[in-house]
Image (cartoon, rainbow, N blue to C red; front, side, top):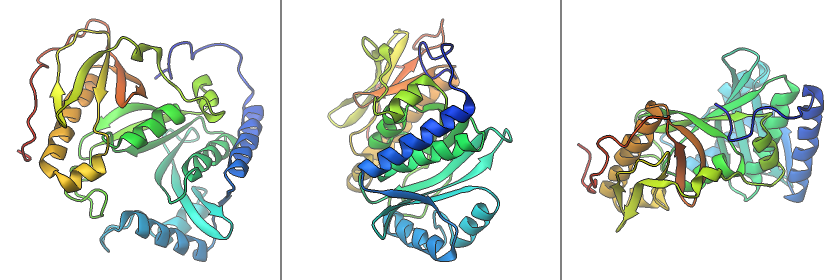
Length: 305
């Protein structure tokens, strides 16, 4: 998928030059944040990552985000395992593995941080690592209903969702996801795209089509409201704080989950392109000729089923 209007063509930086530029940029961002980003390679470091992630996700014993043994294997096999350090303290980590097509893609499996700025610094380090290894894309999954993650991935990094994955992981035994279905969006970060380069330089991406787009899913009295619109570009809203909503009102959280799956997932299945995230909404450009179909009913906040 093209990263947005005007992204194809224009001058291209040679791969080696792009990797060097990305490395300098990543080091500068980390330094401004007072962080050091480094690849991890020892069992002690992997154990520290496990403890960091345990504190973030609070998983059931049978469901850790990643184990020390797996990180050891991935690191030895040429995968990506990196940490963000604030002085001696580990404040973030990211784990990824090479994916198909071979020689082109890194899949970033899990990232967790406990300090502002660490996530952005880690992703820029990961981009520089991937370019240095001759890769052109990084992919990862994220919960489409967590607004801050959508903003980070689509605006701050200029990644693009290319697939809606209903209940991708099944039941997840941790404090952040328990009691909910694990729908995910597959984000694709095209490392050489001009919008990505600008985002990494500190210019967040906002699609021009966000202005004047019609609402396909909105919020009314905390509830999701599916709306009819024939606009070529549409907005799909998500709740302000899905994680709190899951704990406070599981029924309303489930209604949002199913509404976003129906509207955003449905638009993507019909060929719609998610071109960004703006003002708490996904921006989706419809495939020419598509209309709103049966959209137009309000979904209640009842329980699953």
